[in-house]
Amino acid sequence: MSGHHKWYSQRLGQDFELKSYGHAGKPVLVFPSMGGRFFDFENFGMIEACRGLLEAGKVRLFAVDGRDWESWKNEGAHPAERGRRHAAWEACLLYEVLPFIGSTTGSSAPRGMIVTGCSGGAFHAANFFFRHPDLCDAMISLSGVYSLEQYLPLGGYCDDNVYYNDPLRYLPGLSNDWFLDLYRRSRIIVCVGQGAWEDICLAESRRLSEVLTAKGVPHWLDLWGQDVNHDWPWWRRQLPYFLGHVLS
Image (cartoon, rainbow, N blue to C red; front, side):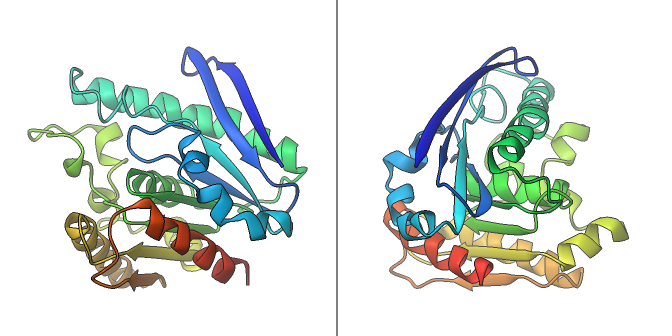
């Protein structure tokens, strides 16, 4: 049911890895948490949590490698260089990973993909969805923050790579009907707990919801209880729950 895939990425100038799970169903692009790797999703029990959906042929999960240690979390690099490395990683996803997913699933259907992630992965999933709504029709972001300011001190610096990878910067001023129409025809799920270590995520999830509401974009902001912490045991419960809703 699973497979490990590795190749040399010309866009990154280094090897890239991902793991795939499942034999049929809608593809799900899984982003790692900030600084995370492609194997984290399995190691933290997320694949086992989705086993029922995988075995039923409802979804195929593709957990990709991150590059945050070269980009937004690279404390020794200028924000401009961090943005360039993020752009190279995104290019790898767009022009290497997505064709791989298409050839693996045998599908070239436009918008036939879900994106998801937990914590820092929720940021990446949301940013990818809002930048490329023509490639995915559903987003499930769990316990995320949605501004780069939470990951690196910009000190007032901003270029295109910074601005257009910071959803809480670019979404408020977005007026392009092409983007907004695709958002409105998508399933957007933003979930966050109200327990330990969720304070920043809770505030940013609410901010994102306010922006989407102002744009007339339907979405589901789901606030879980005060016992729901920023941790894998809760994400293992949340992801199959929300996948079930999207697939229904």
